[in-house]
Length: 186
Image (cartoon, rainbow, N blue to C red):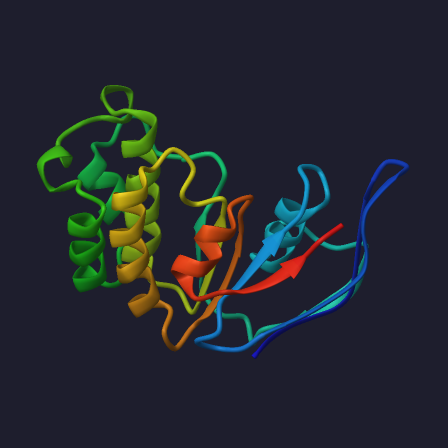
């Protein structure tokens, strides 16, 4: 169980989150929905341990976290293959996701040689290769065509079967493909 209680976060005078309660069980992905600017990314950043809340606490047992950020955050001096394997702990997951993401023939490409969708798929494969106890996915499928997204989700669902998975999206279909419950953030 991953639990967040009483989470509050402000930036200056603007309160982004106020008293958020969230429980996510292993193998039961949750997808955050809401308009841009409502705090989805902030909540995910707090869940990943990258942002400290002003109030509240997180109960997760200090587990390892695989993240797919809104930005790809690939290392420009590394090829797609090197980016995927840079922190790999699960080579089998890396291989499965690289295939599902359609990247096998592009592993020698550098980020500046790839399309936005290819960079996004590389970022997802990197998260799969790390294979943390918790998956934090912030709009992970942006720029990926539906057919490829379905293949990636089949692979991701297998990887998060016994893990915590918290994602954000503006597309209800993403939640459906991941078998995720929906939590609206306003």
